[in-house]
Image (tube, rainbow, N blue to C red):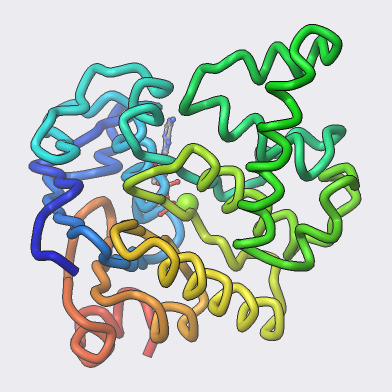
Length: 258
Ligand code: ADP
Ligand code: MG
């Protein structure tokens, strides 16, 4: 970690009618850091990602990427500037192949003719072949088993592989910041261990990549993040190493349920 803030939120607040879903939240994500985000259901974790990625407009507060304000920018611009994400529920193109899903992820950054090429292959075969080779390399670097299944439709993948593919697709945009929303959901312990290893591999190859990861699985939270922040009712109630926050009475009451 470089100690340099890649992504920063200041006073982030959003209201939905009478509900304050995010209430004056500050955060910093450093270059190369993995920041865990935990909290009970409905605490506002996914809302935080939606505020960062431009899907929601904050009622107050700002987000900065390398000191450039992101507020008001459309979501696709924020992807181009280097913030990619996965969603809590799958947003893959179910009928397209694994490889094509990654190619579309590449397109979201470059706006090359790749998307057109996919729809009209005869028009830009060379470009598509190049993109396919690059997407294949990326898939292999995320997960060998995903690479082996590259020609299958996304809908045919096991749940754990679908979650992995979403990560690969987000990485295809070559982000500086990767936001993962409950990547282990629907996974058993074995899959979760494999996911932890995959994410370690991803960060080992990309030391500058910064990751925010929303998670419920405490094994993952204990193992991956350098720091964890705890959100409850839209407020940040604690922040620190997993060891620090797990021993805070307030966190145990709010979240760990003991
Ligand atoms: P978490 O991801 O921590 O489980 P969310 O961020 O999804 O929680 O939701 C936080 C709160 O904000 C919930 O009460 C949820 O119902 C509400 N909320 C989120 N998005 C919207 C929306 N678009 N409209 C109304 N309420 C919303
Ligand atoms: Mg959520």
